[in-house]
Length: 85
Image (cartoon, rainbow, N blue to C red; front, side, top):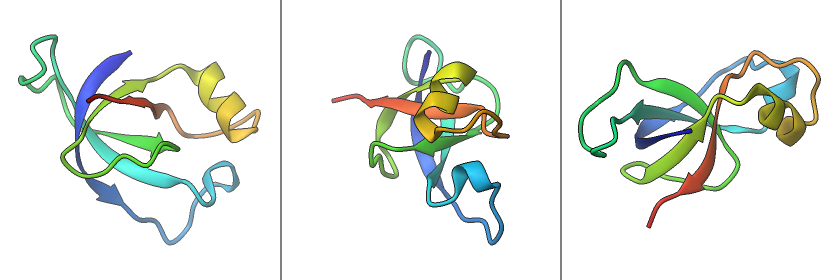
């Protein structure tokens, strides 16, 4: 798990069947201080309704994402699992 800031959304004209109807967020992972960027932004599947500028918790847990999407195979790696107050 890692915290990050939502820096935008992404749209796709064609999506893999496992992520049809999912909202795609561009998230900038942060270091433990919550301010310093940690690498490049990632594309995360959002099922919670996060928006631009919000601080979120993301995970790259493949099993959790496959269960959430109800798909045994998906190209998605990151997902939003929490929105920080």
